[in-house]
Image (cartoon, rainbow over all chains, first blue to last red; front, side, top):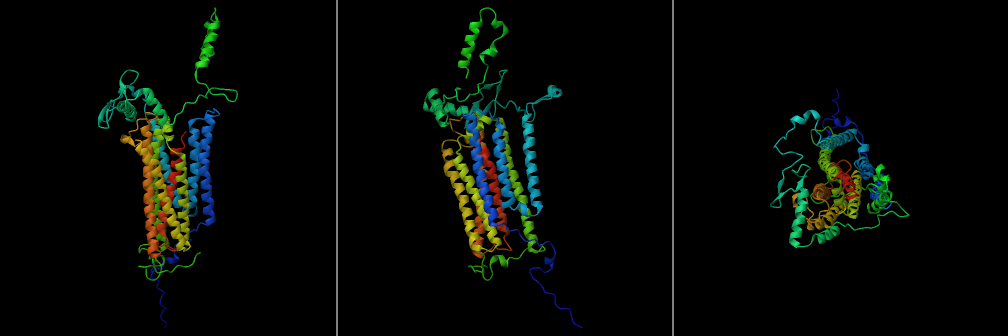
Length: 258
Length: 229
């Protein structure tokens, strides 16, 4: 009888598992794909910068009133496209086991929860339900969240808050407000300059330059805020010799009201 | 240029490191080991994203509360350097993806060249950040949190903005250094024993994933920090 031929023994695979499992080779991204993606990313980066300067131009020169969220929305959508490109192609999420994409998407979901719930909490900090008004009290260490302690210790010294709310009690808004004010006071005390000189240096340090071009002219209109004189006029102003007075007031208000 | 490289560098007799690599016993085959390592690393990347999501959350909440302070603070940042840093990181992402491709095709020379370019980009990013942003600001007294000592704050809450800025970019810069360290280690192993090749490049792949994540984080940080108006 012929003995069975000896099994070929592969020391790298003693149990013969090589036949099992999927044999999908590792995907090799082509150079062309990588180059196209990197060029797209560079273009999108330039686009992000350009759209933000377009927006600044529109608000400053053309006087368009763009709401705050437009800046964030545009910038974030371009950033989202860029991030997705990097994730899908550079990190090869597109070519691989969908499990990795699921992990990443779940991570994004956790991030959304984090931001969303924190935002909802913060937005409603001042909210007190009617049925809770009577039983409202400070919690935890007895420090009220809306009215933090009125003295803090900063830079080795104790600083008093100087802000008062409508009922005259001292309130604060974190330590950065008093910190900035305290630094200004120390600077003025140390250098001995006047308030006006401080304002001048402040404007220089913050790159703020006066521009007197914010009046409307034939080329463009500039949005005005505040009441025009005509809106102030009531029915009683029209009676008995107040017309001239009312018209003068209106003109005076228009000229001074920017 | 995909010649089979069977060089025998010092300390690596015989076949190159990637050919001599033996996967761990408890896996069925090398493919399973690669997939398992990659899965673990993706889970780790998810935790890194959550770390940065804390910073982004702080940014979002404080920007909602103090929008003028954020706008005032952002004006002190130069978009030029932020843009250059973005381009540097994008190029480095490209070169690290190319180096992984070279490993898959057994092109050892270009694998190392691409890794070196990536590491140089990392240090360039860190240098630009330090020399043109951190050091000038720090010397003006613009520092995070309680260390803030600039008397010309543009807005009472501007120190909060600077805390967010230093926190976010500082932790990101730390990750750039960590990523660079991982890539340097890969480079050293490649030089020592040609460790990365078509059948084994797990460490390089994972270091590359880490680097891409660092790049993605910066892609989101750049418009949020530099382009507020």
